[in-house]
Length: 344
Image (cartoon, rainbow, N blue to C red; front, side, top):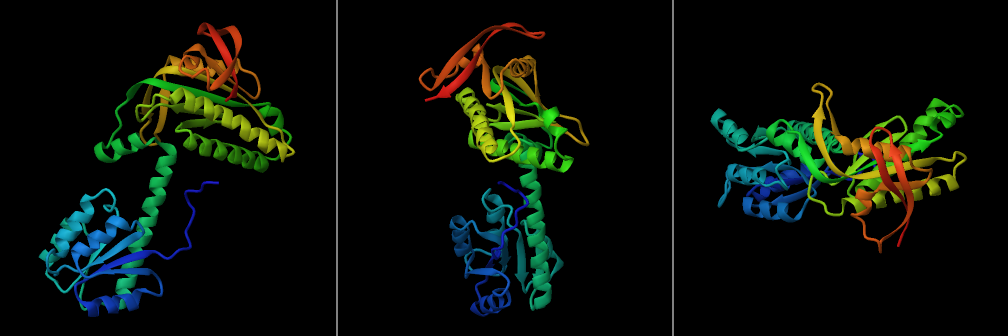
């Protein structure tokens, strides 16, 4: 089960960069009981290590080094998308305020002058590693709530402009008999069940390149095809829906509670945007979203119901279909619906 608050028991890795062997030995001795330590005798070597080793979580960086000084090294670290978020602490004999200012402008997170106090160095490292963990928790939580392209726009532009997506598939999934089951178990058990079920749905969504939009009670809504051009959005979504049914069948075989679901899928153009300000929510809307909801409500338990629009995007040799016939979708008129009965 995924958990974005999971804590690793492994030691954090610190890269120490200094052209003085004596300084490297002193710092290694200071840090090795609490951290995994890597060393580099030059800025060039430090950049080589960072290109191939993604484990480095903090850098202690000297400024006065041959070939490339610490300021230039820091600027290169911050200019790379792979290393820009690693905190850099300057550890240097330079002690003028102008040196410190230059270090912060280069992207440094902190500035410690030599000769240093060991307790101060350890305290500063601890603070920046903890801040790094908090940022990662926030980033991971944001990625649960928002698609990657929306996060990128918010970080780079400070806002997300509503978009029209011409090729998407929308899914609604509802648990059948939810009200009756919720009356037979305790609130604690109910939340546990929904948490287990929706976590499994989320894992399947990630596997099939599907984005969860929201849950409303026992209902789960997802979209495929937003964020990037994806010609397989209908196939991905149908596989996701069939995966949900497979999961519930497996869960039911080992549980005293039998959960069944109805799933409806429709493909077409939708609009996405952030709704609200202080407590915003990423959402999708449009007539095709409403049609998908109507398809779900006209489906049958433990089946994936789709429209002709979705069926036309699927390969006949990949899936087998059962024709439901023309169905009057409330407020949307007559539409031909199909059940996906199996995949080859």
